[in-house]
Length: 379
Image (cartoon, rainbow, N blue to C red; front, top):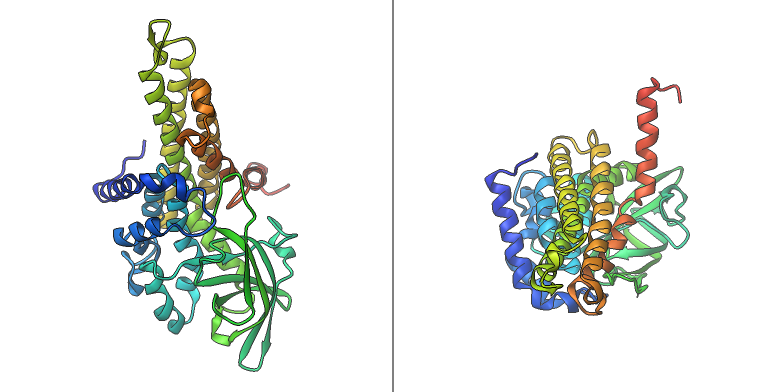
């Protein structure tokens, strides 16, 4: 078992208090494709977004702490997917900038990210490109002292709300990340599509968008290594969010089955329901322990522990799917009511097995590395 120290316990408590205070807005916010103003204001006031930025630029610690991000996302996701997304994407969208951006850009933008004055976005996928990012067609070319970005990105979280996009582009024979302020001429956004779990999302077009050469993040051709570093740091936080969602679903199931009687006794004591509740609790605690361990290890060396982060992401999101399904089942017809919290959790659980690395993609990668290890690299 991995036990959190007092600082993380306090941080988690702060995040739970925030999620509880914003609970009256959760159903509305989780149905929106744009930023919910009360959610943003509450997150701003909490100061939690500063966890997503190094202290040099207004953040809380010298470097990003994956365990801190993870325990906060666990608490926030139990209340609202919208709130969790607003928090988590501040780090995902700005990490490469903090790691390899020019000093001028970092000083100008990262304090705004920490204060949630500027919303961040990472633009990777395209209409015909998902997991196979090397097939992207968005390009960046040099023109004098400028860079020109051309292409289209789709299913981009925070599209339309973001103050800037960190854009993965093809550059000559390699791939580069380009920092593009949303207000730059040639940037346009189409909101949508509508998902089963509504999300701040859209398609972003870059029509001969011109930015200065210092808007390239890192060196030419360094794009994939920076994307990998981002995923290595933040993937495990998806596991934290999944644990939080699973716990919230189980809490709903326990409240319902403890308070409703059938055949003269509470549902929680009837038929297979005790087994289902106990199994869900067991799986949640198992996922939580792996998640905390992976996040702690990611804080030491994100890339060296990426496999463990991937395991945690798979385990926790699969657990969330099973737990929320069981919770609906034990709540019977009341679990099927639209507009209820359990219905919202049920919908929000499903995309988690797809985004930030589809679970089958991740387990395939894990399998290949496992086979290489056990066969001495002969396969």
